[in-house]
Image (cartoon, rainbow, N blue to C red; front, side, top):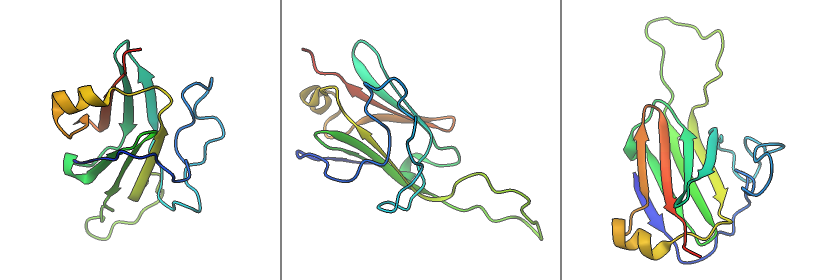
Length: 143
């Protein structure tokens, strides 16, 4: 995984998850937009007493396939899931799995503990890829 941290606000058009304060964060959210032609993986955003956790469904990938960027007000996860060729003379009858470039933009309404991120894991975001899911853990700021 590649990690980048920015000390400024994200100014892109949010085409990803809605603000976590809404009752249904997925209702009416497009899977892609004209601004970003990539597909958007399914994701959950939840919180524990100490962290915000983003769980992204992206099977068939490796850790080095992800780029994770943390802005002052957003988390952006992107990468490319390569197309898998059929063996022999196979013919597809249905194609429901997304391949190619993807991008997920998560607005951050909750303050993140950036100093703790820096102390514990240096300049890296705490993330892991396990059984087809990418987990990104962001420590919450103590209020």
